Image (tube, rainbow, N blue to C red):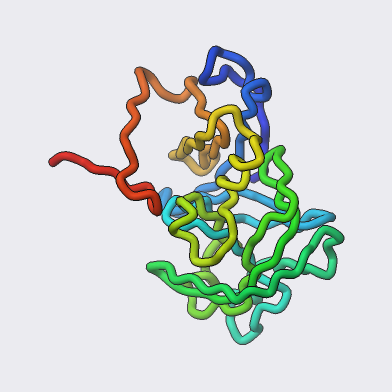
Amino acid sequence: MGVTLRGAPGPYGGDPRGAQRIYGVTLGGLGLQAQYYGTVSLGTPPQTFRVIFDTGSADLWVPSARCCRLHLACWLHPHYYSALSCTHRPNGTSFSIHYGSGSLRGFLSQDTLQISNVSLEAQTFAEAVALPGLTFATARFDGVLGLAYPAAAAGPAVPVFDNMMQRGIFRNNVFAFRLGTSGGDGGELLLGGFDEEHFEGPLHYVPVTRRAYWQLHMDR
């Protein structure tokens, strides 16, 4: 599994993705298409992690080199070593987050994030030092990259996609998922647009009713 940028017919006039500044992240699937993850890197030189792209949270975290060895997950996943990165900036603010299936705590740091062909300098993220329970120990992903609104963030960091928008990386502030259905094709996350090759008919837009999660109104 890797991160890829491919030229293809684009959603706004048929230009290649590169011309439209659309960036693709190849996804890997887990189990019965219950979780989809992709590869990002932090630091200089890059340290690689598999992260879930989560629309239900807004924070980015990966296991820290200071992860507590009393927790099994800290033995089973790669760690971020700030001392090995020449672009690391210490922050130190405490961080904790609770998911439906588990919780963790750590502290904030800043470093260069590489996602697809995009490099974000001084991206704030959390280094997880406590990963209790089996949820993270048995996971095929190493961390989480949240795609929800800033209001859903557990910490003060600007979420990754919002950071990309603020820096003017995209022509269109859109992200889209294509979820694969087979082991060989996990799908793709597109940042900055969508790919008309993978659907038919018009797109219909629905207003977001709560700018925290991607909440919308549905009629019965």
